[in-house]
Amino acid sequence: MTTFNDPELKHTLNQSPETNDEHSGSLITVLIAVGANLIIAIAKTVAAFITGSASMIAEAAHSWADAGNGTLLIVAEKKSVKPADKSHPLGYGKESYVWSMIAAFGVFTAGSIVSIYTGIKEWNATESETNYTIAFIVLAVAFVLEGFSLIQAYRQSKKHGEALDISALGYVVDTSNPTLRGVFFEDLAAVIGLVVAAAAMGMHAYTGEAYWDALGSIIVGLLLGVVAIFLISRNRDFLVGYRVTDRMHEYVLSELLNHPDIDSVSYLHLEWVGPKKIFMVAAVDIAGNQKEEHVAQKFEEIENLFRDNPVFQEAILTLSAPNADILKLEDI
Image (cartoon, rainbow, N blue to C red; front, side, top):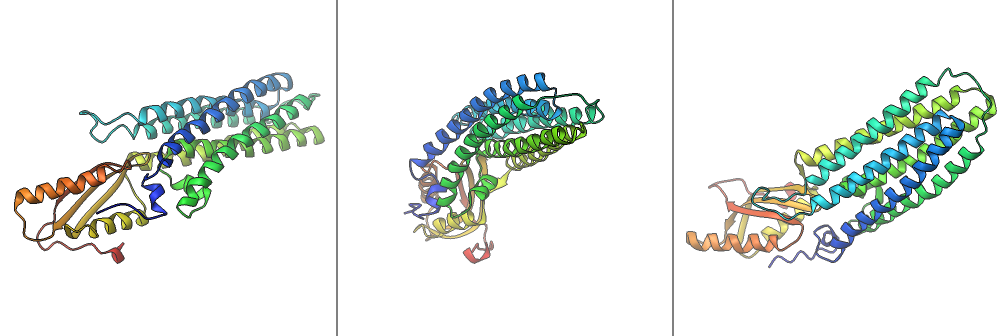
């Protein structure tokens, strides 16, 4: 019987309460991020109004964009868990990638473009006396809040990455969970952006040259653009059909080959159709010379074995074509 007992892939295949933990953990992570960004956005806006700093204006735009994006990520979390129905037999998991892509595009438009435009506009601004004290205080508080949110995302990523023997960053990049990826990289960009903004305003105050402040705004904008393009690309990967890792492919193939009723496997397709949701199609040769109705019954039993595992949204088996090439574990 297929039991999915591999100690490392057990986590990935959702055979423990950690399945719900990851979903709730992602929601908690994004809620923390939204709350922090709202507070920070208000404070940065006030500081930007008082100081007129281009870098602070860019940071304010960044935080408002992140707060809006966080809201979209919450929508993504909620919509993606809707159960399958007649109109969507493979479920609504890809809703998560749609809303996450919209959120990533929001970073580019509301954050990157505004920041770059502000920097260019203020590049040759007339020098004026500016007290950046309030701005530095706001940036310091924002750094603490953004850092806390980033640590929360990092801890969640590290926890799940350790179960797969990969780094936290590796897990964030490869995970089928776009909410965690979005929060992690937005928080990382926010922390780096705060350092850039502080340095730019510090150089402006030290040298008296306004272009330093404008340069900080442009750098923040470019940083947001890079993050947005990366997130859009990853969400696109999963929307158009993203296959599982070779390691998981090998593991599922081994589970099929180890089943007592399966002689061989000639085809195996494993595709992500949502966060932690896989669509499986396999062509197999049933052991023995069984009648058609018995083969159909065996197929149903094996399919249900996979369907009972929460990570499989759907599992479909079909008979291998005569003389079809046989899949072997070493071929993967």
